[in-house]
Image 1 (cartoon, helix red, strand yellow):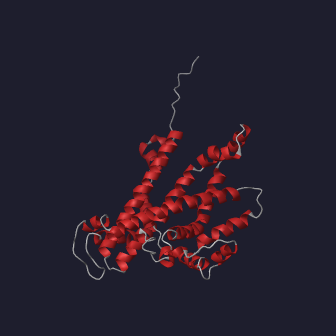
Image 2 (image 1 turned 90 degrees about the vertical axis):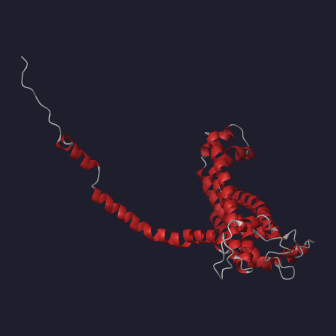
Length: 321
């Protein structure tokens, strides 16, 4: 005989009321407000500094680029005439070409040297790896101005050690900084020497992230060291290579220190880059409005080339996937 007593189920107290359940899931508005105020309070110092030293100078420079200000007066509004002048002035066009030539010299050289050294120092059978990594990275720590001064003495045709050593084996170097053909490669070589240690560290991090299983599988398939480099190492470094390319590009477009110290833009304007042209127009010729326009042209060049590189790499990764 079945008991006719109905056993009723009583839900737990926490889910009997929708209001109680919601109160457990959603914090009170007062708590949310306090957390938001705390977050904004922590962010406020950084926002103030960025606004004061990045955004406001950028806005001010753009306004100056629309005027004929000399820096000593407010100047008059001239619209886009400064930008039109950038692309019609022989000095500005030469500076743009020199910057592109410098980038074509610097970027491939610094990437090849950094990657080659990173591959060498990534070998586990190499003794004193830590010492060599530190020694090669050290030049990046010093300023470019100091590096330029050091190399100025090293390649001096009268006092430099490098011309002296080369003369002992029958090679007469001459004054490369006074040669319009060799001056730009010389200042690019100084930048390569100073910066390749930084990119070497980046490549080392990328190499250590490549799975060893891929190398073992390629070796089992009979791939030699060169084939493993092209089929395993380079594809595994695609993201790292994008980072290095973009930052090397930014550094190439901002070249100034070693040019100012070693060649002063010469000989015959052969090493005058865009940043050096900005310095000449703004602080020697006192045409601050025109110098600001040149700086925004440089910004546009950097953004366009950087975005094209990032988009191409993103498309390549999508095709691989």
